[in-house]
Length: 104
Image (cartoon, rainbow, N blue to C red):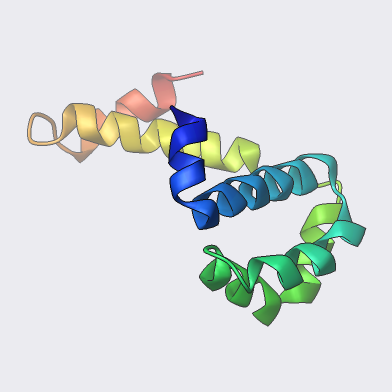
């Protein structure tokens, strides 16, 4: 099914390949692959993403090579949003605070 869709829409196939390469680049911190990827992406479907990344290319390169991650922060934010959704309309601020401090 994927092969038939990609045969009918070659631009979509190219976008899928570029998305996979971008994921690999981020996952493995391949800063050297950023400039060639941006060149290719600007002429295909993810052109808006490429233009946005190019605007702050130094920060993107630093993010690819830096040892830091905001994964813990994002996890905490996700947990707080889940608590808020669970208690929305059924609990006051005091109950929400108690739920936040009770979580590990």
